[in-house]
Amino acid sequence: MRLNPSRRLQGHPLFTLMPGHVISQCERSRFELRRFPVGPLNAQGKAQLKAVEGEYWKVEFALKEGVTKPSGLQVQRNFQNAARRAGGSVEGSDPEWCTLELDASFREGNPCTDYGTTLRINRGGREFWAFVGNTDEGYKMYVLAVGQMAQDISVNQLAEKLVKEGFLTLYVNFDTGKATIKPDSEKTQADAAGALKAAPTLKVEVGGHTDNVGSPKDNEKLSADRAQAVMAELVKRGVAANRLTAKGYGQNVLVADNRSEEGRARNRRVELVKK
Image (cartoon, rainbow, N blue to C red; front, side):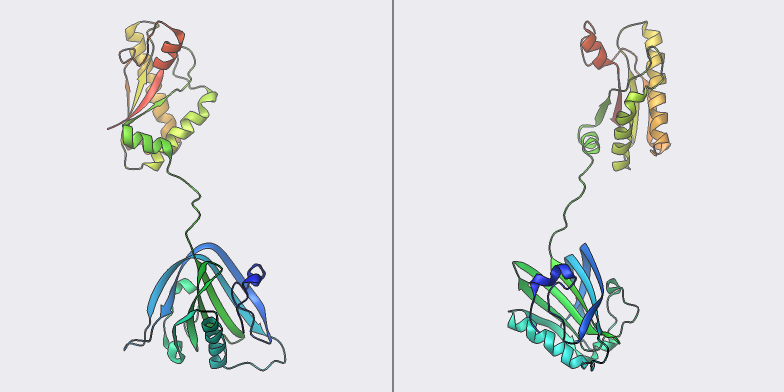
C-alpha cells in the first residue's frame, strides 16, 4: 500500500488499491463539508467530529471473485502505515467504531463501520483528510482535499447600490405621452426586479419623472401612470407588492437641464427610492 496522487482522475484520489480489489463506485464533488471522526471514543462511545471543507470523493471498492477477503484490521493497518510513511497522521481509529453513529453527511444507511480510521496527509501542497472503513463487499474511503470554494456568483451590484446610495435610476422607454413600456426596456426591468429580490427586506418608492414638455398637470399624471406601470411590471417579475408604492413627481424634480434633448432624456426617468 502506498500513496498514488497520479490516480486521482481514475476516481481514486489518494491511495493505491488494496490487492484483489476494484473500484465499484465513485462520487466526486467540487466542494462539500464532511465531518471526520477523530480522537478516542469518549465514555458514551462517541468520537469527536472534525468539520472539513473542500473537494470531496467517495470511493467504494469490491473484492474480486475468488480473492480472500482481508480482515478489517488488515485494511486499517495498511492505510495507517501508508499515511504515516508519507508523513501523515492517524487522527483516530478504534475497532469499536462499529458502534459509532457516523455523521449523516457520509450519506450511509448503515452507521456500523468496523475498524474505521481517519487519516490526515499533506500531499502536493494540499491537505487531505481520509476516512477508511470496511464494507461487506470490500472497503470504502471518503477523501476530502481541504480548500476554498470557487466563488460562482457575486452580490447583485444594483442591489448593493440601492442599499448603499438609497436609490436607483431606471431609464425605462415608454411610448410618447403614454405609460406603455416599450419592449426594449426588458433588460432594465429584469435588472431592477433582480436588484429588489436580492435585497428582500427593502421597501421602495417607485417614482415617475418627466421633462418639461407639456403642461405640469399632464406631466404629473403621466409620471404617476408610468410609475404604476413599472411597479406592476416589478410585481409581475416576482417582487412582493407590499414592498412597493408608486408616486408621480411630474417635471418638478430635475437632474439635468431641460433646454437640451440630452437633458430632457435624463429627466424622463423612474427612480427606485429606499424608504
